[in-house]
Length: 183
Image 1 (tube, rainbow, N blue to C red):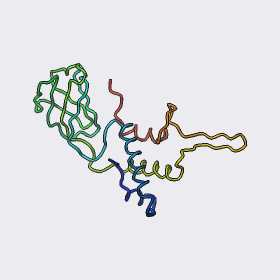
Image 2: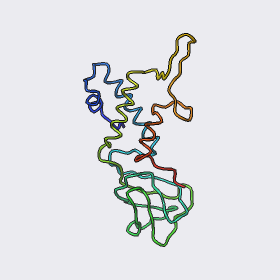
Image 3: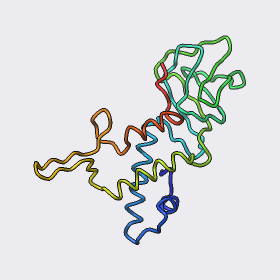
Image 4: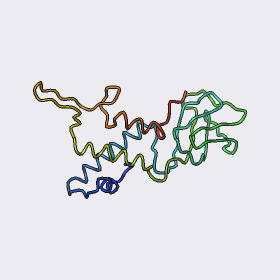
């Protein structure tokens, strides 16, 4: 599901779409939203209730794949129900059971959680609109072009793979919306 609507994109571009443009814009919004969500490691918006399965941390703190946890509905650990009234949790997606350690079993924690933003945060709306506008203006993704020596360079991510997001855009997401590597 796209994090930005075609109407939001049209407002950001300050122009309506021509009849054939809207479908292409929607495809790009879907693709860029998917890229952002994959890069960040969670869906971001809207608020949803979801069952997540994660590896047990083996420690006192158990991370969940969210950065905006609103409620924990249920938790099982290695197939055994956990009393959620005894679980402390943070909005950042961390769970603690005072005096207990979590399992270290792979896929050992299953939690039903409510999480996400009600609406896509404005910084992400602007970022996605900027990426889509760039893709609409330059559909082939050419970053550099020469004429005499016939050289074309395509936009790639820092690791050399094709990406819709630039390094600067990834850094914006890193600051508030990407789940950090949790070890």
